[in-house]
Each structure stands twice: as C-alpha cells, then as structure tokens.
Image (tube, rainbow, N blue to C red; front, side, top):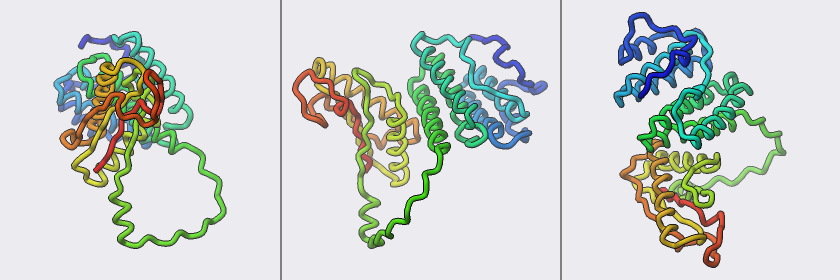
Length: 297
C-alpha cells in the first residue's frame, strides 16, 4: 500500500522508539486511557483493528490503527478517516463520504456521550471499511467492516431513541406451559433480506437488522444448519435472474460469516424467478420478490 502523507497522523503522539509491529500494539494496549467513555472505547476498537491488520501482514495499517488507539488513550480528539487521500473509485468515494457525513452527525448529535460503545465501534468499523475498500482485494473483509459499521450505527440510533410514553397497564398474559415454551423456543422464523432492482447490495438498516437478528438466532440456538436462498422478480431475462439470485445469496452468505456464523453451517441455493413471494406475470418488477430467505434450523 502506498505511503500516505503524515497529515493523516497530525496531532497523534508517537511512542518513542516503538516499531510498527506487535510490540507497538502491546505498548498502546497498556496505556491507561486518560478519559473514560468514548475515547476509552475507541482505544479498544482501534487496537482490535491493529491486531487484525498485523495478522494479515499489513504493517502500515497496523501502525495507523495502533497510533489512532494511542491518540484516543491519551485524550486526543480522533475523528473518523477523512478519506481525502484515499485511492477510491468514484462510486466508493461518494458512498463513503455520504456515510461519513451520517456518522459525524450521529457522533456530534450525542452519540459519543450517550452511547460511547456503539459510537466508538461505528467509527472504527467505518475506518476499517474505508481501508478495505481502498485495498479492494478482500470482498469478505469489505463486507465484514461495512456490516459492522451499519450494525453499530443501527444499535446507536436505537439506543438513543426517546423512551416510549408509559401506557396503561395491560392485563397479565397467562403463563405458558413448560412444553409450549420449549416449542416456541425451537420455532424456525424465516428472515428475509430485500434488495433494490438489479442489485446485490445490502444498503438499508432494515436489511442489516434482519441479518444480525438471523445471526443472533443462529448463535443462541447453536444452529448447525442455515438455509440461504436467493430470489428475483420476473423482470428481465430468466438466465440473468438465475445468476442474480445466486449473487444475492452469496452476499448474504458472506454477511452472515462476517457476523460470526460458521460458513460450514450455511447451505446456499438460489431459484431465480421461479419461486415468487407474490405471483406476477412475466417481466414484472416487484419489491417483495427481490429477496434472500434465511431459515435457521
């Protein structure tokens, strides 16, 4: 990776004599944060990223993340990646700048103080996403960082919602029998991720929520089998749609792996436009049919 200007490290105090390797990470990890809350969490998140880059042999980015962890630990203000010197495609640059604006609005709008854990994770995962997009050679890592960022943003937004007004006390529901409880716990809820027309991109918070809920259900139930099936609507060529459905299934498969699911438990398939959620004629665009269905067993 090319060497960026030192401007990206402005305001960061470098550890004297430390090398960009495991020793630097160890030294930064031992620094007691001067401030609790957001900056302490940011130190932890950046150390995690530094370790991941070191494991991949990326010494340069190991140093970048380690020194950002150091700055946060020492009480310095550390903002998300400024992006200006990253070598990105026009499309990726536009997407990242838009997300950075949204991230800064959430951080400046109380995220740092009210939800320091989620805020720090969102910032670190955004930086991870930007770095992986610039390298652009590890699709699974790009997906992992992107989903991690979007999930942290969702968690932060949900946690900062005003508490609902108290409602009249509802009548107590009858307690379920033990047998009924066991049956409810084993119920297999299908999770559905929807896609825009001719798209394989997971882009909205509802889709991220669905993916994370599916991953949580699989982990909680210690699932050994997860079915992932891709679908399309009937618009366009049937052969093209068969491939599009397969690509959608792959995206969801990789997203689940990025969320900690063992890939060996995932059974991936696709049906193209042959199994519609809502029956239509040929060459009809229908939102409900552009989907990937996840069934956790």
